[in-house]
Image 1: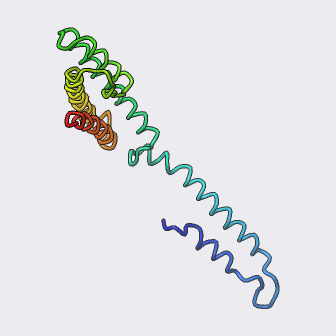
Image 2 (image 1 turned 180 degrees about the vertical axis):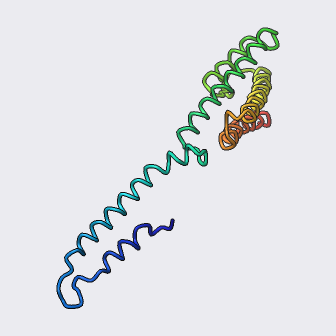
Image 3 (image 1 turned 120 degrees about the vertical axis):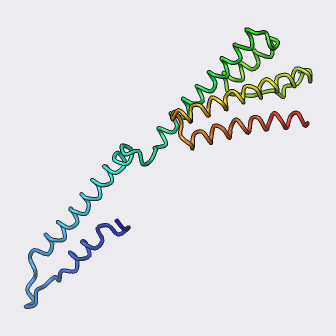
Length: 176
């Protein structure tokens, strides 16, 4: 299966001389060239259309669309797990309601906006501590999804990197 698929048969068909040894035209040469071209075109089209479903069915390669759906489902599951953890914290009154509400909004929207003006430094530090706790919970859930086979390595690495970056952003705010 080289790059020149179809080149050799077409070259062979085109190499048939236009005239015979006696100088008379070869009448079937155009037919041979047309048949060779049609066979090459049909075989390439059939291979091209059947190869991707065959590879997908054999599980040899994942397609981008499936990977995207997998990532969206994993993100949804991570957010649900983080939300459940927040609900547990609220029941145990482990943190003030206004901080839990902020965390719920961040989890629901997957946006972490802790640098707003007007917040007292103690509340910001408490918020970042709780957010780190949620990142750890989401990371554990991601590992569980990966072990269970619900997400592949590439998806796990991409999501873990996003969690790590968010955690690093929280660390940068502590240093500032």
